[in-house]
Amino acid sequence: MTSETVFKKGDLYVYDLSATVLQSLRLITYDSTLREVDPVTEPETEDPSINDKLSNNSVSDSSKCYVCGLEFQKLQQNRDHRKTDFHIFNVKRSIRGLSSIDEGSFESILREQRNISNDTESEGDNDSDGSDSEELYDEKNTQLDDVLENEMSKLSVGVDHDTTVSHLNTRSAQIYFNSNLLLDSEAFGVYKALFSNDQLSIPFQSLRQWNDPTDLSIPISALFMVAGGHFAGAIVSHQRTNVDGNARKVGQSLQEQAVIFLEHKTFHRYTTRRKQGGSQSAMDQAKGKANSAGSSLRRYNEAALRTDIAALLEEWEPYLSKCHNIFVRAHNNVERKLFTENKAIKANKESVKSFPFTTGRPTISELKRSWCELTYLKKVTKPSPLPLKKPTAVNGSLDTSKTATASKDEESKKEKSLEEQHTEQMLLYLKKGKAPLLLAYMRKHKVGVDFLLAPLSKYSVTPTMLHLASQQGLRQMVTILLCNMKCNPCLLNSAGKTAWDLAKDVKVERAFQLARYKLGEDYTDWLKSHIAEPLSREQIEELEREERERENKEARAAIEQELKAVKEKKRAEVEARRGQGRTLENASMSLSPNLNSLSEDQRRRLLREQRARAAEARMRKQ
Image 1 (cartoon, rainbow, N blue to C red):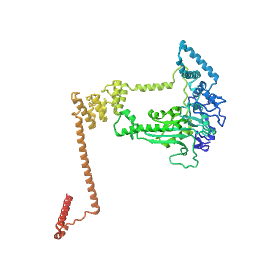
Image 2: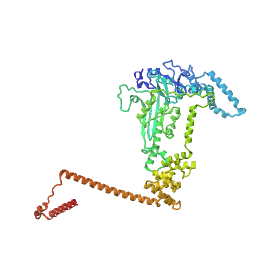
Image 3: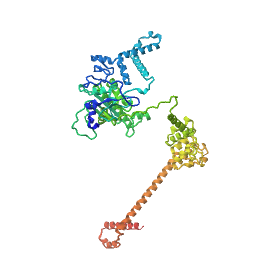
Image 4: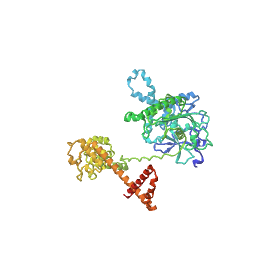
């Protein structure tokens, strides 16, 4: 049977599951190797009406305790029971995958623990003052934890630690349920973040309570996102609106259309420089406080953003105090404190959770998408079981495969000598231009600046870092190696060449000349280094300026020559297509008799035109 023929996407809303889906769910429990096993205890699930209610808080609104398997006549009795050590102990056992115990067994276990504690106490306990009573609660909790640890240790004697059975063993963000509506390799997953700590031990009963038709209350939750100056918040109802017959919207599913936001708000403040990332406060802490108009504006907007969020949370406090879950997306503690410092959220801090998946930019549509991602069952593939550990030999010998693997790793490490390891790491820093890390590494391992790279057969042409930097064109590293680290520029390679001789770029050569200028003529025998005359930074800048001017002049000449060639080519094409044309040589002669009839100004204008035509003709002949 395929899932498509039985249920739709809308039937998987955890707060409004269809009867078919809800009745088909069976909680999956795993051992530590992620193999499905039968649960230790099967909770009672016969009553379809679910008259007993589970609460998100420590105080229950039901007359039955599912954890301890007890039923009470009055609601107050159940509430008092929830506060007892017996109930707390069973909750802790359930979380660790252990079955619940009755009250008699709990008293006997607790009595044994007290006897052990009394044997270790000093004789002078009777003289203790009244301050011990203030630590009674902590002592009880510690005692319960000790009892639980003893129980766990007893269970683990003679048995592998991998025998713990729980639906939480997957270490996944979801709890998995089997269903006869799915294939054997598939399961329904629901996010753990939707459950409270008490509900995590009984997730199936929690799902049934959420879908109780007799419960007329409408729970709510809160969603908050803040990132990069963008903020989005909403109070969402667990009840959906009816979207039957709605048309699909671009970029919004029907499930997102069904989300009901009782309140929602978004705003944006310019707090992050574009394409830079990180807030202005983080940049100030990393690089110091910048003094610019943009940085001042971003600091102001950060403070304004905090003020806006605080004001909104204060306005929504009546909702926040009633929220079952408060989901917060914040990248750092500073942003998270914007929410956790609110008094309504602080009073309900157990409900504050993070989104168990990646979210996008804070917007209303992203809040709706995230809420749908949280609250709909997911059809997922079941987790793959872990490979079983091979039993060790009786004589205590190690596994041969592990021994072989370990020996191979040791051999690979031994293949490289210490010098080769130094060479590999130092060249990594050198090629990336990370001079501080290179210097720190050399100091830590006490490596000299003229260290010979290994193996010599590989680095015969570039035996030192200075040779390699010169050959690779690392101008900045050449300057650092010579001026700061004081490398010897006179060392020769196997071909009798210095680092200067390997330079393939004028800029690298000038880096050598600048280093010679800074170090002075008395630093070493510069003739042996083959480095040309020293140059100051001003001289180098002047040479570079002259080169740029010469290059620009040559470029302009080349452009003009190219334009001239293009014009000549076009003229030749026109002449080839239309012919050279015929000039009117007697035009001036035919006009000369009529010059007397012209005025003086007209005569001068005509003569100017004739002289201009004659000049153009001469230029064409040249």
